[in-house]
Length: 159
Ligand SMILES: Nc1ccnc(=O)[nH]1
Image 1: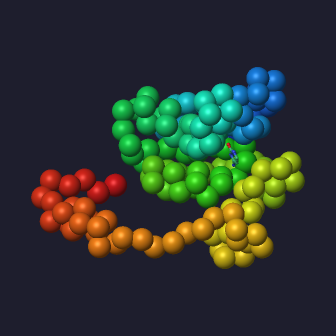
Image 2: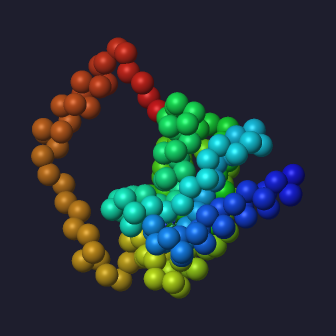
């Protein structure tokens, strides 16, 4: 069991290292495992795809969902070379992944120039630089319409 854990984390770590040679994105790798079997290995693709959301974990979730043909990764385990950023943590929860193993800490990512820690601070209202994002309410009377329709919809899917 311990051997498998080490094996899957090594896959994630090697995938992260690859990016230092190919420059497809930051040094982050991840893999998703189901019932002890590898589903996908993925790495950060932010630079290769011009997609700021293409973190290793999101890329792994997208690939696993495509491969398994579902939006629901219940029963899957995520191994990631770094503690997930808030976006990836949310994506993990949305995907119903319940078990995550991480290698590096958010502080380790901060130490090499990534803003993981900063975003956590921002969400907690503790960021020093609050000019990074202006977040204002607007037009709820317009937007609530679709929510009211959904509330009354008979054939809805909740995820
Ligand atoms: N934890 C992470 C931070 C930034 N990029 C990633 O792919 N992963």
